[in-house]
Length: 550
Image (cartoon, rainbow, N blue to C red):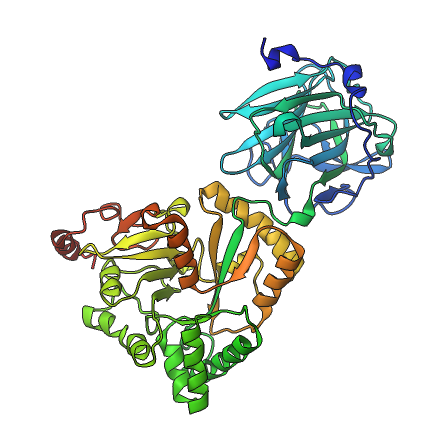
C-alpha cells in the first residue's frame, strides 16, 4: 500500500500526542510578515476574483476587532463568488517556514477556504491547507501542476462561525524531506498547542523556497469569512533565498551629453568624477569602476596633470578600473562602417600606448546594436559586449531570453564576442536596491521582489551580473557601502563589486565557452526571427544589407 493510501485521513488525537510543544503564538510577531488588518492594507497585497481592478476582500469589524472579510458577493453584483488575495513574502527556505492566522467562517454546503504557500520558480509549486464545507482540514501539494491531497482530518475540526487559529508549518522531516503539517486550536492565539492535527512527509520536496502566500475563500453568495492576525515566520537572517547566490555589481557613469546639463558642464564632470574614482580606488581595496567609453577618459586626460595621468594608467593596468572600447554610445544601427570603426580608435590606441587591456564594448541607453558589431569588435581584439538598453524606448528583448545569457553574439564572418544584455536597462541595479537613496532595508526588500523574477524567467546560473549606471552621475562609495553592509549582515546572495571582464572571465572559466548559446543579427526589442540563429555567411550579410538590416 502506498504511503498516501496508508494515511489519507489522520485524526486529530493521534498527532496531538506526537509533536514537540511550540512556543505560544503572539500576533504581530512574524519574522517575515505581519498583518492585523486594523489599518491601511499593506501595499503588497494583490487581490481579485476574476474582475480587473476590483478588491473583493474588505476590512470590517468582527466584534471589536477589524478583520479581512469576504462575503461571497465580490465588489459587483456580477462578480464571481471567489475571494482571492496573495502577498509577497521575503524569499526564504521552505524548511522551518510557517504561517498562522485567525479564521472564522460560516462554512456550509459548497464552501471552502484555502491557504497556499508557494514557490514561484523555477516552476510554480505549492503546499495547500484547505478548510472544507464541513470543517475538515486537508494538506495537499502540487504534482505536475495539479494538487494532490496528501493527508486530512475528520469533519468538524473547524466549527462553523467560531473563531479558530490555524498554523501551516514546514519543518525538517525524515530522510531530509520536508515535513508539512497543520494545527487548529481555540481559546486565543496564545493557547497554541504543541501537537499537529495533520501532517505528511513530502518525499518530492515540492517547495524548496517560499516566495508568497495566498488566501482564497469561495462558496455560495453571502457565506462569510473573517481572517485576522496573520503572521509569516521564517529565517529572515539568511537574506534572500534564491538560486542566484552571487551578484556581481558593475558600476559606471553613463555618458549622455547635454541631457542633464550643457555639454561644457558634462566635460567638467568627466574630470571631477574620475578624480573621485581614482581617490576611491586608493582608499577602497575592493572598490571597482568601469569607464563606460573613451570620451570620459579623453575629456579627463585633457584636464589632468602628468601625475594624475600616471595614477590613471596604474589603476587601469591594475584591473580594478577598466576602460570601455567604444567612444560615445553611438547609435550603431545608423552609423556608417567608417564611423563605427573609428569609434574604436581612441580606446584602442590608448590601450596600446599605455599597456592597458581594452576588452569590453558597452552600449547604453539606446534601443539596440547592429549585427555588424561583433565582427568589428572581435577583429579589433575586443572580447566582450555589454548592452544596457533604453527599455523605455526600445522595450525589453525577448531573445536571447533570461535563460540564454550570457551568449555568443556571432558576426557575419563567424567571429564572435561573449555578450550580456541587461534584463532591464543600464540602471537595472536601482530596482534591486541600489538607487540613490536606498538603505540596507530597501536592498533587502527589493532583492526579495526581483530575484524570484529571474528564477521565474529561467535564469540558470548562481552568478548574476547587475549594471548600476545613470546619466552623468557618480555617487562615490554608496553602492560599495551597501555591498559591505549586506555581506556583513546576510548570508545570501553574496555581493561583489566587479568589472564586466571579471564576470565574463569567471563565467568562461567556470562553465566553459560551449555552455553559452549563439545568436546572430541585429537586436532591439527582439532579435529579428529571420536573423536569430541564421547562418553566418557573407551571402547572409549581403542579403541583410539588401533588406535594410545593416
